[in-house]
Length: 137
Image (cartoon, rainbow, N blue to C red; front, side):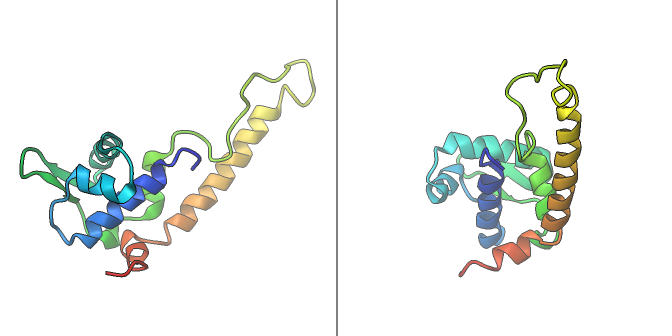
């Protein structure tokens, strides 16, 4: 993804997996990511709305995984953060009088949908647990 949300969200989920059920603060996660805690909280809202995490508000609050890391597929994570096509799109409208311009977007969309379908299938072959296992404890 060209906007970094997948990488940020996956980093958050790995941290939560490594925490083994302990509540982690957005400040702690932001320190690991080396980003502003506000950006972490924004992603946590999306992750919570999509059933990946649960949060507890307040002074002793934090975030933990909502389900087993074995049940979290990376393709599902990608789909919940995807905002536009991985390969991008035209910044302007092509000329409708041109034989290529009038059809380019429909052909690009078909190409992108096929590529993203394959990407999601590939990502779904890996769980959060298997990805997280790549990191030393």
